[in-house]
Each structure stands twice: as structure tokens, then as C-alpha cells.
Image 1 (cartoon, helix red, strand yellow):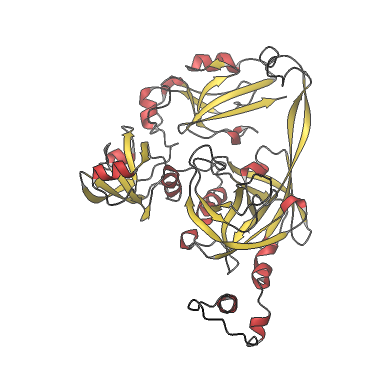
Image 2 (image 1 turned 180 degrees about the vertical axis):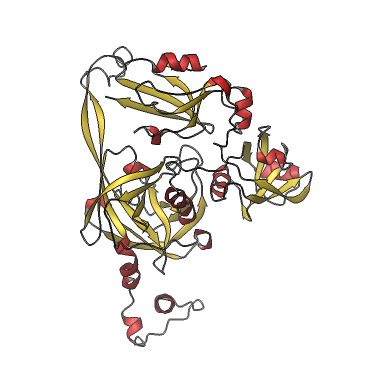
Length: 469
């Protein structure tokens, strides 16, 4: 394979001084005539699948519900009727009967059908879903002797590396497109086309609707990323696509194999901001780099390691962190319980400290009578919740920005809706009712409601969930 890539580079491009004409010659051997990505495709394509997902959504029968003027007046009136909504995407077999795809492809699906490249079909069961990472893991029922893709080290990628995107764009069937790695460490800036908390590989390999969840592979046929989003004005590819790095995919798959239903990531308990040129000059930095620490929770592992407000985090685990999304990504790759080296600028001096990686769900057993298991029918049934206190907020590493009141989800049950929640979620509103205490939560959930509108505070952001039945 290396020979093919080297030959391709020689045959396609020869650098000569300006004004010197390239020599025209007959191709030297069969290898230069038959330049092709076919061996890479033969290795990778069998492990890329088509996914057909079905979910039930409620459709309002009240004609005034979507009217800008009348919608508030008729918000709680009018019956809803279930309607099937179908989505099409791609996935990648990663071994052990498991398929990785995007959360936005299969999340909340009531029926998942997976079709292999050899036309075999399997029923898929969602075993892990993480909306923040936009990743989901599916287990294929009764599947044997499946092809799978090896996961590459996505940190070894370089801008300019050749890559192939494999998926099912627009439902036309499995399709392969080629390109290069256009950028690394792409993070959202807010208001853009991709998640502000994300961290992506950018590629110009054409990616279109239906490619979501498909494979981005290198020239050895290894998975380097899961295609997830594009920047577009027309709905088609404009040459700017994003893939979730394989190193994060590997962590999610490893936890799914261990039986986890939601991805558990270390929590920093630290509030940071970008270092711009003015801050860099004030701190004596040659270039804007790193993240300025604005605040820390008293229980933050960074605080225990000696980090204080005003420090600049330069790298974590040997990798630079120059955006909040990079810090989140690098922490997500660490093992829970491990001590990770963090390079800091502290009082004008560069030093390295060891920070313990702790799970946000690592809560003690002394929660007392303010904890309960929800038994009332509804989306919370089976969850373990705890009234939020300043002490509990500190224990979970929550920084400012979240109200002290509220009810925190500290344990997931086996209910059908439990995959929509994560340990550490704070329920702040149910059906328009603010939740300040466990009593508020009981009143809001002890109702025979057909519609549930829930607002959750999740790691400084807000998530809105709706169920209708």
C-alpha cells in the first residue's frame, strides 16, 4: 500500500523550478498506469454499513400550534398523534458485533435496521448513546463472522494526509470519496455549523447527507474518524466536512463493551477562557496559547493539584489545549483514576502537575434523605435523583453558572428513556414548572401527563427534551 501511495505522489506531482517544463515520458511499469485506491476500499468498505432508523414523533392536530401569534395560547391544547419518522445514515463495524454511528442518526430510534455491504440485514439494538459526543454504539442481533475496521491513532494524522470517506450519501448506496485531511483540532466557535463543544478532523473528501456515521479511513484502511457534519449552503458537499477522531471513538466503544449505557468522561471542575494576544502579552507569552483559568470548584482535581485562577493550562497529557473543546476532548481520552500530566504557566513559570482524572458520577454514599428513586410513570421512572446543595455541587465539581437549587440525576435506571440522561444532569424545569427542590420535582412528576417538556443543565449548557404520547 505504501508503494502505491509513493508512486501516486511521484506520478501526479513533480516540483520543478519556475519556467522549466516537465519532461513527458512513458509511464514506467504497471504500477504507474493502474494508480488506484481499490486495495484500500477492498479492505475497509465491507465494514461500513447502511443504517435505517425509525422513531415515533408526535404530530399536532391543532392548526394554530405553529402560528407565531397563537402558539402560546394553544400550547397545551390539541391532541397529538404519533407519526413515524425515518432517518438514513451509515455506521462502522468495530468488532464484537458492535457498530458505531452518530447519535443524531440512531438516537431515540424505536427501530434500527442495519444492512451490510454484502446485503445481509440485522436488527440493531442501541447499547450506548452520547449526544454530547454525537456517538452511538449498536449491537447487531445474531450476527457472526462480521468484518471490522481497525482503529488508527488519530493523533498521528497530519494535514495533507490522504483519506477516504465511505458511507451512503442520499441513500444511493455505498459510496467512496477521496480527499485529504484539511485541518486538525477544529473546535466550534459558537453560532457556527458544528457543536461548540466538539473537536474534529476536517476533510475535503465529499460528505453528504447519509454519510453521517460513516468511516473516514487512511491509506492503510484503518478508521481515523466517524463522519458527522458538513458546512453547506446548498445541502450538499462544499468541501468542508468534519469527523469525530478515532481516539474518542475507541474510548466510547471500550466503555460500551464494559456494559456502560452512557459515556463517562472525567470532569475538570474548571472554568477557562481563550488566551488572546492581549492576555498573552500581559502574561509574558510569546504567542497566544493555552487556556486561562478563570474559576475552579473547591472539589476540582485541578484545584487539588495546585492550579489557581490566573494560571494558564498549556497542555494535558502531552497535547496542547488552545480551546475549551480541546480540553474537553483531551480529558475524555484519559482513563478514570489515572494521574495525567498538565503543563501550566504559574506565576510566570512553566511547571507540570499531575491531575487525577475523576468521573463526574463518583458520588459518595452519604446523600441522606434528599435522594430518591423515581417510581412515578414518565420519562424519569427508575432514575435516582438528589436535591442539589452547595456541598453536592462541590462534590460533583460543578462551577458557577448553575443554580444552587434543582434536582440532580445521580443514577440511571433501566427505563426506556434513561439513555437520554447522564449522571450529573440537573433538572431545572418540567412542563414549565421551575424545579428548585425535591418537593418541586415530586409535584411536577406525580401527574398523569401525556406531554413532557424538560429542561436540563448539563455541564454548563442547556438541553431541552420533549416526550409526547
